[in-house]
Image (cartoon, chains in turn cyan, red):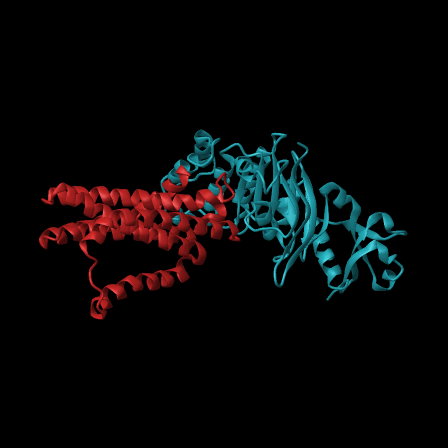
Length: 286
Length: 202
């Protein structure tokens, strides 16, 4: 199966927000970062993938299977981590082990124990006494302790310190070593995504702005800096968005459309996201 | 499914000291007042409450959202609560039966009383679960209180308005009638809960 996750023309309408014909796919063996502002539709998209909410239009294929017909058996192979821990707070990791053993056919107790040790999670402390980082690590340990082929992560590293984030990213990188494993991760912490992702999908106000390989993105775009008077000479088709500062103009541009001698710096994923957002506000940021 | 019910027992078990204290109190009160039905009645009531409490725990930790990402169907989620209720009532039934026989009640009488209590407990669960699935604990709590107000009011005002206790021939039909009511209520209750839960947006 070539695609771990595929969304085709997926829409969902609420009174004051809509997801509009979302299309993207995640090739097997890769990591895709899902970025967007708060309220852009990231969590809604993930809930649609897991059939937690009903879509109004389109199809979703998880590990090659339609998520409406066969989801229960597919879920044996999905590991999900969401921003809040949903484990009942009076339970301990040992309780969780026994509960999940009774839910997942492929639950691997030894694996769970070894992740608990690796991530320094106590087995017999109630979850309400955990720090935020520990709760997240527990969710991750659970997601990895059955036959997961696809990890779906909704802002898993929010609010965690850099040391724990690094620990967690290492665990993800270890997971992806197996070519049949894939990861779909939404996050605000773009530096984390830049470290590990192969693909980046950017959602803005319910629509996908782009879904491309990270390397392509970094090659295609650049941040052009010039004095204000020189800016009008630039082909406006080459400019995604720009802003003025005290030195002149800073603009996100398509490198191959720029003629002439300009200073073009590397554009990071965060730059690309910010300038695209500026563009939707009318090309200028104050 | 097994994991879901285990989770409920772990959650409910956290209160074990309070529950044991309550049961001890009912026991002592029953013995002291030579009222063997008090213990059974209160224990059954406790089990019905515990079923609701299990749902409250789930709501508090937003468990459903996480659970549905696992190989668990919406049907499993609904049925597990009914099964939990039945398990708890069976425990109450057994405890009540033993208590009554141990305190001198004639076994057949004890069996009948225990069955009736378990039946009423089951009926209560069948009424409350769909309400909780639909409205959640906060709103559901008030609706349930209202629902249970009806038999209380009837029991209180009925005699004053001339309602008499049904005669003996009716009483003999009661077990069959009761079973019929339970079966029909069971089917209706589970169907409503399933329909509500399958459409719920998490």
